[in-house]
Amino acid sequence: MSISNAFGISRSGLVANSQWAETVSGNIANADRRGYGRRTVDFTATMGGGVITTGMSREADQSLVRMYRTELGRLSRQDAIAAGLTTYAAALGEPGDTTSPAQRLAELQTSLDLLFNAPSDVSAQRGAVQSAQSLARGLNQLSATLEATARETRTAVAGDLANVNTMLSDLADLNRRIELTEPGSLPRAVLEDEIAAALDDLSEHMDIRTDTRNSGRVDVYTSGGARLVEGQTAFVVEFDAATSRLSANGIEITPPSDRGFSEGTLSGQFELLNRILPQMRGQLDEYARALMETFEAADASLAPGEAGLFTDEGAAFDPTRLTGLAGRIAVNDAVLPEAGGALWRMRDGIGALTEGAPGVSDQVGAFIDGLDARQSFDSATGLPSDLTLGEFAASFMAFQKTVRAQAQEQGEALTASAAAIEEAKLGAQGVNVDDELQQLLMIEKSYAANSQVVSTLSDMLDALLNAV
Image (cartoon, rainbow, N blue to C red):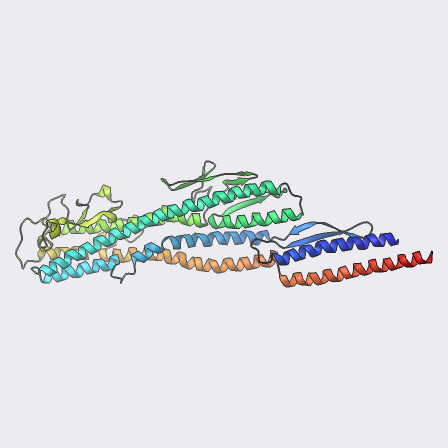
């Protein structure tokens, strides 16, 4: 081997060392940066015995990446459901709370018991009326809170969709930029980091499939196969608030449609809008319906079609106006002195034209029997259909509280599993500073060896020149 060849080999080693050191120092500097994939330099030997760098690799375990994004979407879905129901769950209360529907009904029953034993007592009559008003107003407030929850959820959907469409547009632009880079180059690795972080963010909103091309671009689809990003084209996701439907490029992707997705915050929000909140609203309306019909059926003073103690904005129950009934139910003006009514109708019947005998409590007894009787409820509520009013109140409260509690519990479990997968992912593609520092020691030794060779070769040349 000639001296000049030896110089060339050592020089190639020093250049490779420089690139290696630059990569390792970059890894250490970016160790805590989200989405950063550890870089490694690829070396190859030359024909003359030297070494050159052939590119840079960005470490990524695609299996762990897919698992992490899936778990992230599942976690986000449960969090969206639990967070969306927080305000309503607080308004609903617990069964023993004085403001809960079950307790308000129990207070009405207690007031009627007191009135039955003292039918001529004006304070007992007033107490029964006030308990009925409290029950009706409680249902009004719950219905209003449920409607507010639906509005807030639609607002959250609009906000998330704005973010999603921005992410899709950004991914299309990243695809354009990455196709201009060389494979194995630092610019490509940087763009791969940005794409990975963008896909992680997108996975919080919806579960996706990706297809990475040789050019570096990443095409994105919903888990059902609908196109979201292809090359440099992003397909806008649109929301029809009137029908609570999502579409992309003319294809419906509303969760859980076949071409859509089933996880992520958007999935949780659409589950609230299209399943959970309507079912809860149906339970409230069915409870209001049962209250109205119970007091109408038990009241012997009413003519057919007349409203009983509870009314639908002053009218008797109308089966065609069931939706939203809990928000409209009110106590009949006939028992409200401030509205021209009379308290004694709580004793004699809502339709009574004249005050009856003070000591007669038959009508009050009929009201009490009606509340204690088992009756049929609509099975579409998802609850047992043969219950008393009190049992139905306790059932729908337990059902509605459980929906949020289960979402919260599953979210907590998924938080732990997502964290475990993320840790494994970071172990596979993240930066271990201790390992990088060990590489720096190897770089130092390699640099020292190549420098020593160059120094020795320089001394040899000096000796040869001096001998001439």
